[in-house]
Length: 303
Ligand code: GLN
Image (tube, rainbow, N blue to C red; front, top):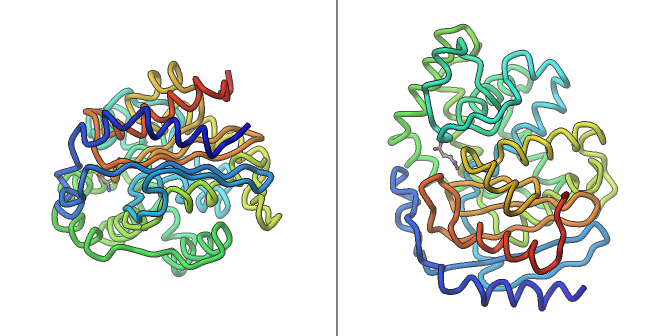
């Protein structure tokens, strides 16, 4: 297939909705990002790459970093990671507190904020310098050090009242070991990682390739762990829109409130689309439509 012309056609088709939706205004630094931007890129496991639109414009990856956190968590702890984190879709917004009360501080899955905070806690216990662990993983995946946006990190720290509530609430059930500020600090740092569509499409190649990074041949996670990360992306990666994503896209996806959506086509490629305007579930309006259009043009879906 001619990936380049497919991505260009998708970019042209989504143009009317680019600029629609709302930026994540609860994080002031993200609220300032211009909305009229759209990028898309893919990288195949065979080394082909294609890109269209603002495919190299840097953005805050936000919750897409939860996939990196989960990868590090599984590397460090293996199945013991699941002692404190579930694997069920939440059916609730990504920053919701309600289930935690009934479920005694055990988050439904690692891709909602509560779950990612628990993963961050486990990483703080497992690594002397967890930021370095993220950086080392970034180097293995992209061959370069990760960039962090200090302003976004600061902005989240000063406006992250819900995340602070979540972390404190979980700790009240004894499900967080480390100091709350350290847990929140690591979480905000990972959310502030900066990348672009072309970078993320390359970075997550291991998920399309049985756990092995296609460019380097380095094993990042086991085949089974890669399969499980993909399963969780499909069922939980886009929060309470995950059912709708499975229905319309049918690929493991992970979104972030910076406007990125990463999608894995197992055995084939990783695709990343980005546009800052979000719908009410916190998923990018244009990137979401781009995923649907890509799948309907190519027939690439796990179903
Ligand atoms: N940093 C964001 C938050 O904690 C991440 C959420 C997201 O991307 N869905 O609210």
